[in-house]
Length: 127
Figure 1: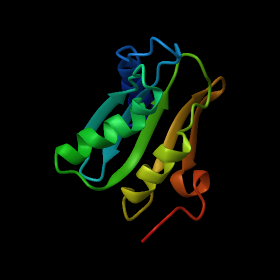
Figure 2: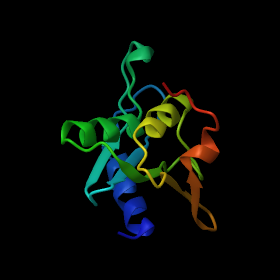
Figure 3: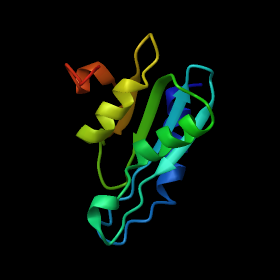
């Protein structure tokens, strides 16, 4: 699957975000090592600590379906160019990256930008 398609699916997912407090919708689309697709959006809670990011929502869906290796994730927000994952999401993504790494795809004014999770989270926590 092309990265442009993943971004479009992430954009669609962002439309389902529940963000009454921040007004900052985010959508994510994961491509697993088995070429399965999972999407997620962020959803907030009045108790802010219970808010779930789009990336972790998508990872949870993949895990629930038995997937353990992620090779790419596209992230989209209509409010921000190059919307990269927060620190918590970077750590979670790092743990489930495929043996060949994990590409983090974002949209910028000049097109698609691709980072690796290891670039975004050097020396992540590992047991």
